[in-house]
Image 1 (cartoon, helix red, strand yellow):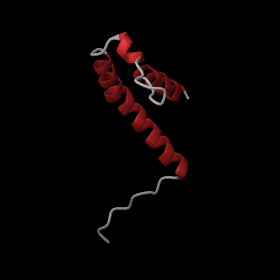
Image 2 (tube, rainbow, N blue to C red):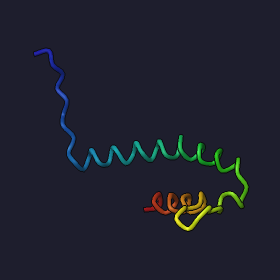
Image 3 (cartoon, rainbow, N blue to C red):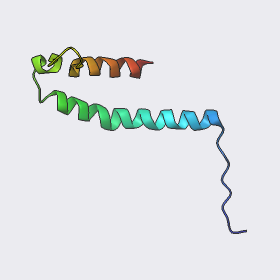
Length: 70
């Protein structure tokens, strides 16, 4: 008594809620932040790799874009 009843989400509904929340956060918060950061470096710096084991900023952005499309 006195406790609120909260229906449990199905696994599918829970997953969809997480995807929707993440997508909103990504586009509303992360994209502007990434664009601000990119505006502070030159194109040369975007593609710079100090060594063979390091991934460039540009390559990371390409991977992020690919992940968003999936």
